[in-house]
Amino acid sequence: MIWHAEDLWQHTAALLPGFTVEVLPSIDSTNTELMRRARAGQAEPVLLIAEDQTAGKGRQGRPWSNTPGASLMCSLGLVLAPRDWSGLSLAVGLAVAQALQPTAPHAPLRIGLKWPNDLWLTDDRKLGGILIETANLPQSHQAGRYVIVGIGLNIQPPAQTGTWHATPACLQELDPRWTAPLALAQLLPMLVRQLLEFAEDGFAPCVAQFATLDVLRGRPVHTSDGLAGLALGVGPDGALHIETAHGVQAIHSAEVSVRPHNMPLPR
Image (cartoon, rainbow, N blue to C red):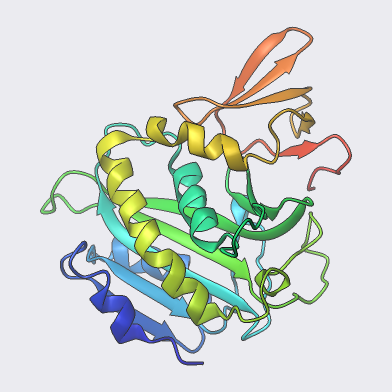
């Protein structure tokens, strides 16, 4: 697969001095590899692209399965020092969803966002996910933390396995011309700009845009910790607001799973 790493670098290096791009034929997990590097003191901005992941992971440590060539699997690592980290995964998801929406004239929005870090098609099928991890920097570095933004996207129809908790979808359903390199080239510039803007302004400026893609808003939902009610959307801190019989509850923890009432929660 041809990733056009030189083009990716040229369009990003001006925004992230010292930026590099690496394509790995096989790795356990791009997020895990960047975490290893960060703990060894490497904090330069880098994009790792995997053609195959042998131990890909999603939220709460769940495995992310892939067939080589059928998925986009990459992680972007960089130093960020926002005043407030709340809502970072939502801001990242917003950038990815906006970058990949159908662009034909009058085409409806097809890619939605499910709190806190999933990309769904608007028919409630999972297209991909975001996994954000952070690491402390050595004292010799500037303030902030090393942020690892992992992205997994189904490009072609994924193999059916027991690891899916929502019916999978793929990007080629929207346009058969999509490939993993094309998707990455399309989303990377918007992702980097979004991360830099988040560091300056936080999530609050993204709330209105997120609302237009929020697949849970206005729907009955239930959570893994027993809460049930009507999803009202997200606040400026990225919290999900749910109207319950006991009033409006704000969910901040990424450890809480949320599903529409007609869908089972992951185990």
